Image (cartoon, rainbow, N blue to C red; front, side, top):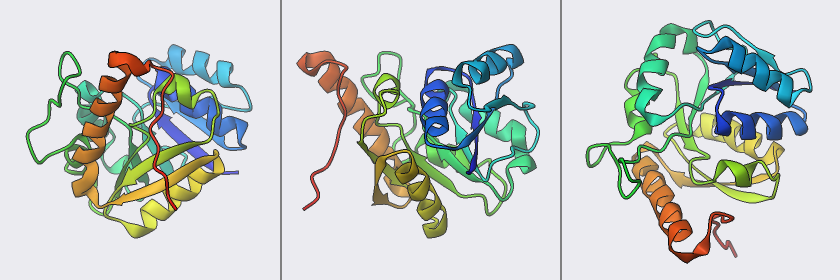
Length: 205
């Protein structure tokens, strides 16, 4: 059993936490809204617990599941408490109508997060191309990931496999904007006939 810490208490935190708990992981939820984190822990069950926001997370893998508008501030708030952890950035820096990205060209939410993490703390972009309600269905899905640390990506891939997702490594952190634009592609498909009961995948022969 692995402890997975999740910063956030919204829909994605709920979907990831419930799926991970179902597959045997211990879940720690960290949120500024302690009552909401505790309510989500109670909803997930299986020993899920609410931790103290800003304290050192219990898990070696920390999933940052807060909206892009606050993600950099949250990670900066944790500061050295994240040293030695592996951060999974699931955020999508959508603009106001989700027709494009709010980041500057060539950058990404993952890069912005990496810029405020303690030295040597790897950031892996993952799970941003799967709708939360689809993830919650516990279907086998493809999960794309990007990051510069081979060791961190191996740990994240092992976690993803443990919750019955198929990890597909797309390269270094410079590929994070591609994954964020892939989420825009997903939104475009969903809005233009495919519907929101949709997941992207790759055929690997």
